[in-house]
Length: 243
Image (tube, rainbow, N blue to C red):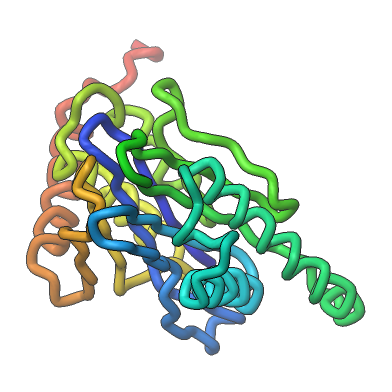
């Protein structure tokens, strides 16, 4: 399984993904689910995937080949993020046309979900959720974050905290707590994590980190979050319904 979350804030974008894939409890592997497409000084785009790993890798690889070949229709030449999101959707459909029938013969569903965001030129940073059909929706002020994969465990903290003018560090902290809640409740999501904080108008990647089990900051917030939750729980009054 997978958990990825991305947040759009006034200060930029935050992306966080785990890297665990599994086909049963005894077949666990590590594969990156975050893919970065960058033209320093001009554009930064980040793609995170959930679903069938082979499909996800085909989509990401296809987009990278287009970019490396300087194709007219590529992430390198897209005039804005909306056009770039359409290119990602087109690639999803292309992979579907190539593989869906063969996958169906083996009883495998064409399953992929994508978070895609970034900034092109002077345009506002934008964030999209792209589905298996290649269609997509965009994050708004009212709905500034997207989750894909095993999303239910990490959603409550996002709903309570995300919003307003949080710093990128504050958004990243919230995303890491959301990830920790998911890891705690679902063994199919796990370390290492990929974290990328994109600073608005920088148009280059300056803050990217791989977080493993030895990372002192992640370990400290996991322990502190659990400690404070227990403390608040103990301070709440017991129900007095039967008094």
